[in-house]
Length: 124
Image 1 (cartoon, rainbow, N blue to C red):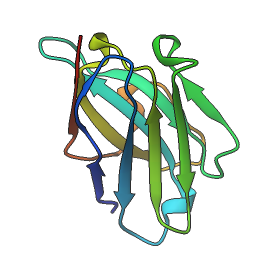
Image 2: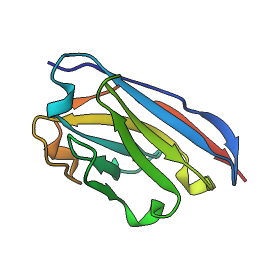
Image 3: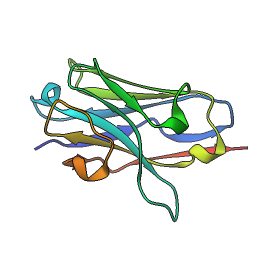
Image 4: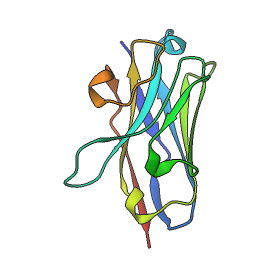
């Protein structure tokens, strides 16, 4: 069992940066692939970024390439989402997710554990 707690969300202006953190419980964090997803009001949850167990492989949604970076620290049991050049369309609740395998994935259904989410609001 893994428990995930996101933090770092907030209200920012367009062009600003935020770094989200996701702290995971459990001693097997390094064996899990991790992902970030987001859900805007009235929309389905969508893939943002994912990272393999070692951090050697990362995936990013096309909409955030060049602006967002995913990373992890297996000593601190934490995964990060660095978000730069934020846009109003990035406004959503951001969720951290863990997958019981070392290979990352882009699909919501591929993840086994979810955090409670953190709100990111970008004003124009």
